[in-house]
Image 1 (cartoon, rainbow, N blue to C red):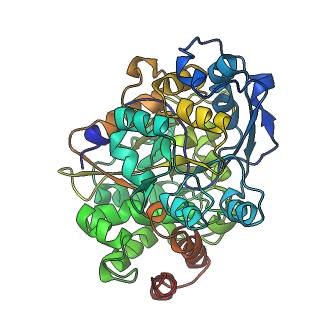
Image 2 (image 1 turned 180 degrees about the horizontal axis):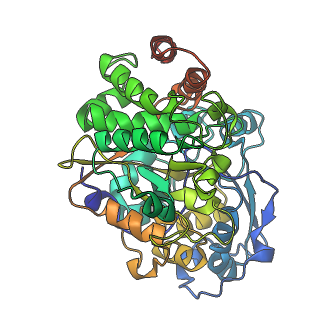
Length: 451
């Protein structure tokens, strides 16, 4: 489908996987400082919830957590409720443990629809209240299917992100006379030229270490390339297991990724050899772009803007910027994206009220006010686009609303959790450290649930 029909410009934050280390609980009731006034009437229907606490568990951690927490302040001002926020790098692994152990949070931000299905299967996820469903129907109808399991609606979309980005240093490109590649072959040609021009650095830097979620950045590589080599229709079949994971189309995409990630001449700039990709944290992986050509290129999503050091100018004329990961030719524009979904494990009035707020235009606009260093796009099509100030968000908006763009949701996020956030992550990690293509794809295929 066209992205212009799926996503409108708004604000939010997302990742397949985690963000920064951190994770100490934060009480939004005590620390928020936003002063935006909103209509409190929608929350009066839930009764007096002053002093009530809603616990939130998420993979959104420092430095992206603080502006997210601040965006809750209008709800807190309206209701007197408190939001206890906890971000964790081990979110995907620990959430099922907590749920099984009877220690589920009130609300979790699930970065994979596949994980939502897994959680729904536990019988512990509560269907979204009618107020949330009404907001979604009005504000983000094209995302409703991703929060629906077996015909029942559970989770509204929260953030949305663009993953088809390559980060680079405009100054380094200008100094070397490099041009932004317009096709995939141009990208490989540029990589060859950088490798030849600068033997003291590498064209690419990469890192897939992310705690219990290690491996997810490598799956994004495969998905982005699969969209480009196989096309959206075959991509959909792969996502739904209508073709096996070890299908020749997938093998072609993985081999194409290997031309970069398993090429000692191309990686791992500023870090070491190919195998260091597995031990380099995804947060730190792109930093050598700033190091006078430690590396020149880093493929990572829009939300990576928040990981550059404080004081880094992220703009077309700044210290770092990003370009669209090119397709096989200039006639197509596949775009890989993702997001997270609000799932509730409790049906208390204060929980329902907070779910309603997070699905509202008011929350999406508040994210504009509190947003930090970028990665602030949501699925809410009715939010005010004029509130977008960050250059990265503007670039994301241009890509998302391009009429020639064909959007697909992150495949691993849609696959069964045992695969998408399990064997796919692990298989790609093993691939980086030496496992061959066939063994990797066979391993993942053999793990696919039989029913």
